[in-house]
Image 1 (cartoon, rainbow, N blue to C red):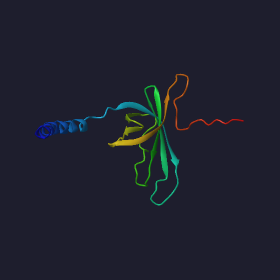
Image 2: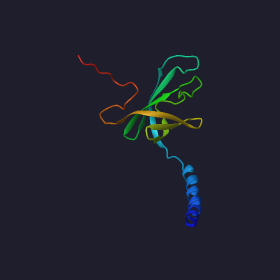
Image 3: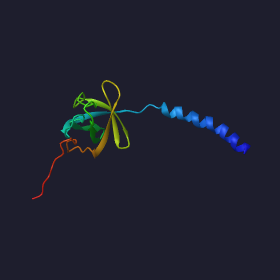
Image 4: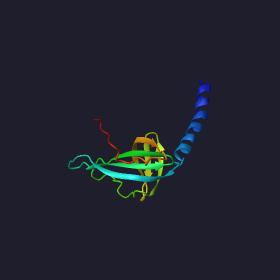
Length: 133
């Protein structure tokens, strides 16, 4: 029992020392280009926001379509971004974070990833619709 206690006493400070290192890591941002930004109406309500946003960001040879829901009227809306300007981004799983001009990150959800082809325009929020006769 004393061995176990000694092991815990030695291991606990080492385990706790790793936590601040992880918290202090800085996120690595990449530079992309905002290709498209559109507001889409989502409904109405007294406190509910009136729109969601579709953003298209080109990073290297990939284009990402992103969705940002403004759930409340006082939620941040990405209307200060300029289409065609560079944006600083980081990707974590299915989320993309865009650096806002006034500080902080805008969290968006990646809805589509598409590899760019030289003979084709980058994907935008206005996806083409095809019909069959």
